[in-house]
Image: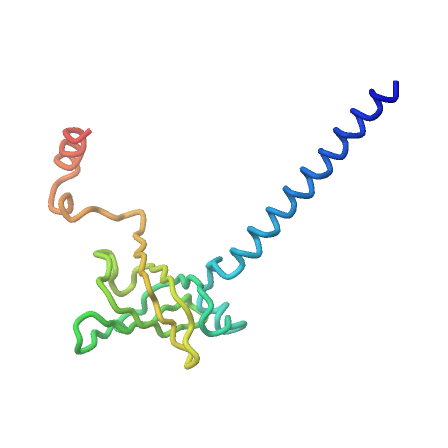
Length: 152
């Protein structure tokens, strides 16, 4: 009878150890990833509670009309992202997505500079529900449906 109780006790101890190890692994993973998380902000969030400079964030909003300015190096652009309540100046060096135009939605990944400019490492252009690929833009609806049906 004492052997049966000992086996139950061993299982309980193993269960407790496994639970402690599992919780420890979860806490270790959360601690390791604490600075890797990229939080999403809109310009009004940044105006009311700016993130610390250098912290990886995502900035989303609309590219303001007339704000895109290309620099002399040919790859750096400055533009302004707004949400109707606030605006944030953005600087990006690289190739912009095809859908990146004034008045369109954009999500920029990067960090805030101490001077209040957002330095983007990556741009993701968003399109609206009326988006039409360039290849299909000059076709009638019937022709576009025919081309799509042929590719399926």
